[in-house]
Length: 352
Ligand code: MRU
Image (cartoon, rainbow, N blue to C red; front, side):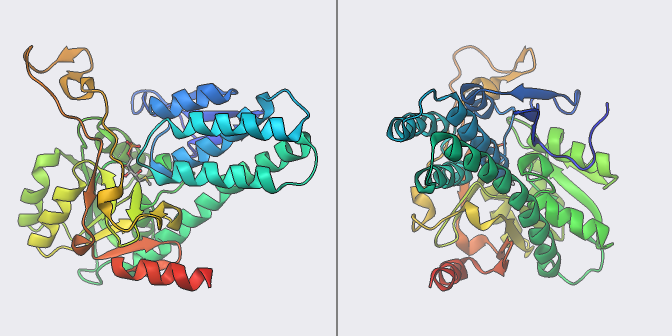
């Protein structure tokens, strides 16, 4: 298996978008070429591309692909059709706010660009590329701030993470795994513990893959082993990503994150959420308003070709849960690490 190093899951080249096919990792490192907006919507739905910031970047390019499919020179008609592209992309996955954030940013530039339809299309491509490159810089900054926020003792840490909040889940480098990368390169990390992350196994498949590629020691555990590992003193900090953070700091992330936070508090282990500010949804006051995606039950009862459960059993498959702000030590953003309650004040200062 070969790969580009570093890993970039969404790449614009030859007038189309190359996505690392994350459904095939770790067995196969391959790309899917996307040149139509409907195919981008499908790629997001089927998790060829996944992870909140990566979905946002993919959706931004999806908006541009949709814009160039619109065959009119009439600006009003163009914008009407573009709203439909936005609607299609918004309908792909409900929880990660970066999707909606990126689509809104693309719609805004479309409305604000003065000129022909061709001018708007050009600016939209530039904006999608900017969203892509800004996200990498954002992740690097999260890595730096995360390094400062980590406990100072012991000198060498083990960090537990859940799901994949790595390069694959962003434009590159990662949020939670960005903090891990920075800690590794500064000599502050001995090992990552990666929860396997049932049912889609993003931890076992993707986080472990990224760590192995980079030579970062990684131990994969099943989700149910995390509290036991904490009790044994194997974990010094938990760092996870987020799909949507409410204004009060309540944070939605991959299902299984909430019980990690409870276990971390019980064992007096700091619990960090690493995410860009674009993941904070200041329009909602608390986590009860975060829409939680429910996915196909097949994800629970099928593992590869095998069926695990008896006929007649029923299933419930929420893809995310919400960790209450009071269980979170700090939210690490590109602007620094904040106590959950400080986010709103920071945003208000930025706006004023
Ligand atoms: O369902 P997924 O794989 O898209 O879920 C991804 C996660 O929950 C990540 O932890 C989150 O998006 C943060 S990615 C930097």
